[in-house]
Length: 73
Image (cartoon, rainbow, N blue to C red):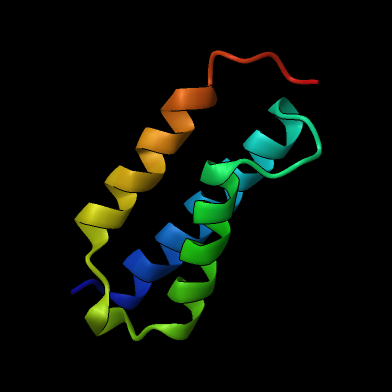
């Protein structure tokens, strides 16, 4: 469960990570980009009471950390 504010934080952070990946990777989507797109869709359609904030923030951070070392194209 999370609060409405935490849901908003998840949506904003996820969008930020998606934008970062788009600037660092070639045009074709990889598996992590697909996963983020699905997570974003799920976040918008799921009630905040049904969201595990800690789990999702950790998943998004893990993906972000995986690509931070790459240069911006």
